[in-house]
Image (tube, rainbow, N blue to C red; front, side):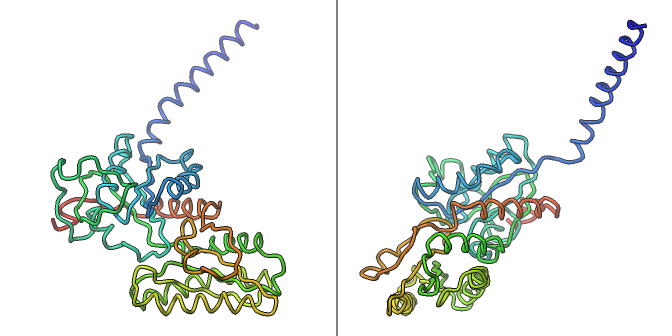
Length: 312
C-alpha cells in the first residue's frame, strides 16, 4: 500500500514538473523582459554615487543602467549596449531631471524616435568616452535594435516630491511660526519655461504649507547659467533670506535639485540660514517616482528606433 502511494506521488510530481516546464517558457515568451535606462545629469563621485544608491533597489526587479550626462549620445549608447548584452530589447527610459521638458526632443533624436540626428559616428570618434567626466553636446543617433518608451514627467511635476519636501522641512525646523522656507531650484533660460518650473515646484510645496505653519514658503529659481537673468533672481533670493532673519526669525533653504546644494553657498554668502545641503536625493520618494515611471511605461507602447524613425 505504501509503495503504491509512493509511486503515485512520484508520478504526480513528475507530471507537475513536466507541466511547469511546458507552460513557463510560453509565458515568458509572451512578456519580453523590460530593461530600465535612467538618464541623470551627472556630477562628481558623490553626486553620481547618491543617484546610484537611490536607484539600487530597482536592480532587484529590473535590468537597470544609468546614463549620466545631459542627453549625451555616447553615454546613452553605452547604457543601451549593456542592456542589450543582457538580452533586453524593450527599454523604459526614465529621465531623472527636474523638468520634463529638459532635453526631451534631443533624447528622442538620439534614440531615433524623432528626426534630426545623424547616424552614429565611426567607433574611433569617441574613444575612451567617460560620461562622468563632463557633458558631450554632440548630437547623433545611437545604433540599436531595441524599442523604447520614454518618460515625459520631471521631478517638478512628481507628486511624490511633496512628501520629500515635507520630510526635509520637518527635520530642519525648530519653530515654524518663526521660520520662512525657501525652496530653491536651478531654473532654465526661457522665461515661459521658468514660470512653469516655479508653478510646478510651488504645487509640490503645498504639502509643506498644509502641514507646517511657516511664516512664508517661497519658491525661487536662480537661472544660474544665464548671467543676465541671474542678477535679478539672486537679488530676490538674498532679500528673502535676509528678511526671514528679522525679528528673531530664521530662514530654511531646501534645494530643489536632484542632488546637492549647487552654487547656493556662494549665492547666500554672509547671510544666516539653515540647510542640510541635500537635494531631492537621498530619499525613498525619488526611488518610488522612478519605479512608478517604469510601471507606467512598461504598460504602454514601445517605439522602434532606426533610420526610418529618425529620418537619418
